[in-house]
Amino acid sequence: MKIIGIILIIIGAINVITGFAGLTSDYADQAISSIGFGIGFIVLGAYLINRAKKKKEEKEEKEKWENE
Image (cartoon, rainbow, N blue to C red; front, side, top):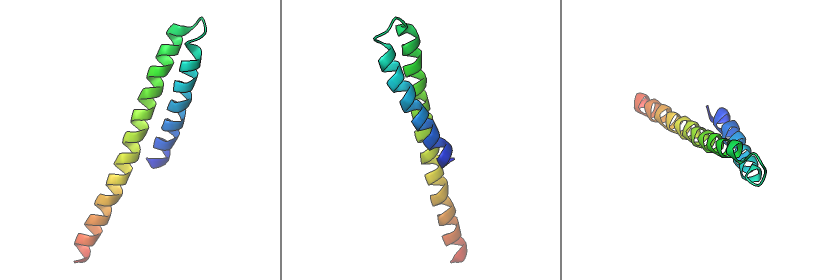
């Protein structure tokens, strides 16, 4: 999940950058949707990274609890 999260953040950042660059062209309405998708990908990627981190912590806690 962590790797997919990182990939989604990269894709989201690229979409946001191209969206802002597209605002100066004649296709501003398409650029706004690109910015929206970029922000969505960044949020989803951050969620996946956070979830992977929490899952790892839960697994370590469970192993610690089982070994006691």
